[in-house]
Image (tube, rainbow, N blue to C red; front, side):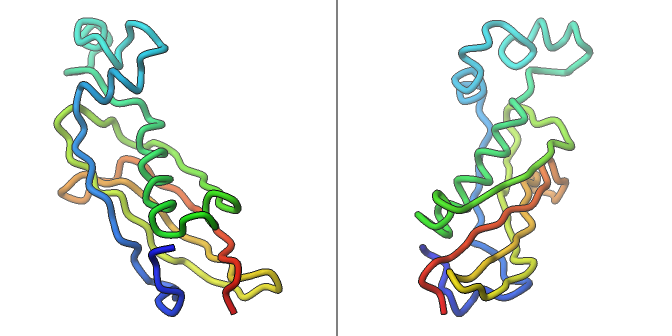
Amino acid sequence: MTVPINKIEPGYKLPHLQKQIKIENIKLFSACTGKSFHTDPEIAKGMGLPNVIAQGLMGHIYIIEMLVRAFGRDFLETGKVSAKFIELVFPGDCLFVRGEVASKNQESNGLSVALNVWCERMWGQKTTVGTATVLIRNAS
């Protein structure tokens, strides 16, 4: 766990991640889906999109990566994320992946932490929003 336990208070902001969205990563993520508006610019344009778009689950995975970096094994074993995708993400977008402690509760088996999590473009427009929970064991 990289987040100091004494810092976990409502309003505490997790160390953020920065992700540059590249067409190569979108294609790699979408490899098993074949040709689609995620991988083929002509299909995307035929659907009225200006370009291919990133899979919505990419934002979800970036959020999970941030939480694993922050809480390590505790998140892998006890963590939960619920997220929804609210804005299209295109190649070339730069996303910041962020999280903030919403609440904490001391329990018999550790510290239960609830978080607000999201991805946003560099100018602040959110693309993915959600919540997460983690139980930090051995926290007293």
